[in-house]
Length: 130
Image (tube, rainbow, N blue to C red):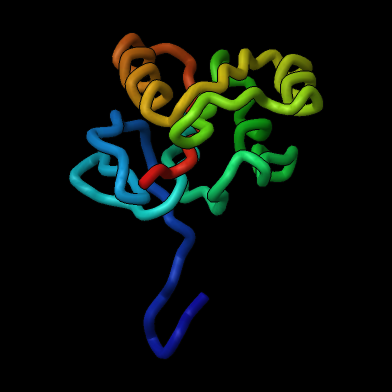
């Protein structure tokens, strides 16, 4: 989208990077900050337009499914508390060959960084927390 000479793009970091911090409604990584939720997949880190687990849907995880061949584990940060994934989403990920593991966002960030440092085929869907 272009607004009077200013190009506005969807938030996207082209590559994989550890997450340095989370909280205050966003994340810090690669010497940048992002307000809102994140989707970290092999092709990069994307802004994710979700605020709460009730917004989880197949459409919300479309980017994960597009890259399923390069993902073994999907860490789902469900906010400040661990909440289970709906049965239909668990089944969808299982069919795609992805182990989807819900946990609090803080636990998901820490686990993502460890698995990323081990060069594992990991992705993360992280709801921002305050």
